[in-house]
Length: 199
Figure: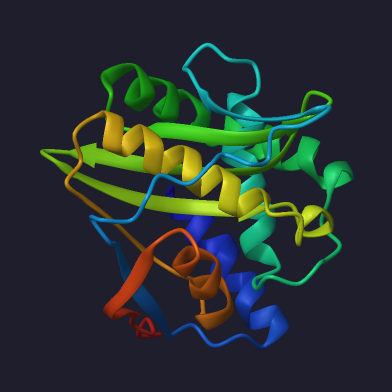
């Protein structure tokens, strides 16, 4: 994440009255959890791993920014009309170029749920020495409650396992989000803390 992204998030938190310190459920995938079906694929919807040259990569990087601007699991407002602006911001701040380098180097894997050419949900995992951290899974607020984040996470878990990850972990945004991950076989093992910055 770029420092300007952090500043934007903090400004939006203040605007909405959301506290800047948070506790997040820290979760680890149960090694015995069966592989989940990537069940978001049907009709015009597909869930897939996104390579560095895929034209949807900028959208897959931008969607979580819009999702985290309206936290939680409830249907919200920031949708496809806002996506072009968010994509432009990711291109302008260098996020897309940095992601391309990381994807090509095998340091980041991106998955996305795509419908009619538009990214509705996306996330990443960072593989390293038999461990995979799932990060930034988010769904456009109007597309929530369709199982898309679950499908994206299942695709990321499958990819992490295919790369030999013995440990797959993540931190959930809140207890509601943690319940989504629990259905995939993740269990809470602790709490991840984000401290309030000194002003």
